[in-house]
Image (tube, rainbow, N blue to C red):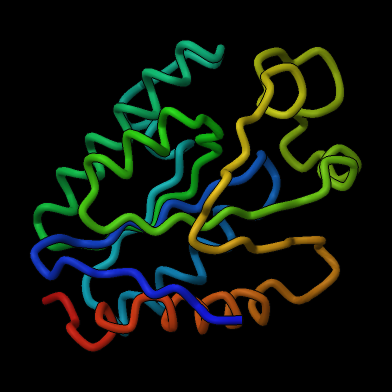
Length: 186
């Protein structure tokens, strides 16, 4: 299988948009990735949707509120990228319009979709979202708009060592963005 390489603009940081349902392993994956990326391509920050909700005191969880919030995330991240700082962002962000907006405003957008079986998430229920009366949960009562063409799909079944899986994911990222790794941002 031939890997389609992406062009990289040296005048901007890269956003690694890590998306998936709640509890799929987005933040844990991002934490492993950020260490590798910082070493190999330069200054790289990590944020999660939960982090930015707290920082900016964003409260809404229904579809319309989530739509506004994800645009706020993108605008903030774009500000950081323009300073030649990379960002690994772990967010549910399961909205087609958000991905379209991201592809429009980010010079260097790399989307990683963490695909996980819903029944496993419901069984694990780490964040206590999928069982009970909690409302406005993406995947439960808000229909997710799964990525149609992410740059990489990472299947997380929680049976394999996450660090080893992320090492494989990282190898694929390097193959898809070779000029980003040869032109370290400083």
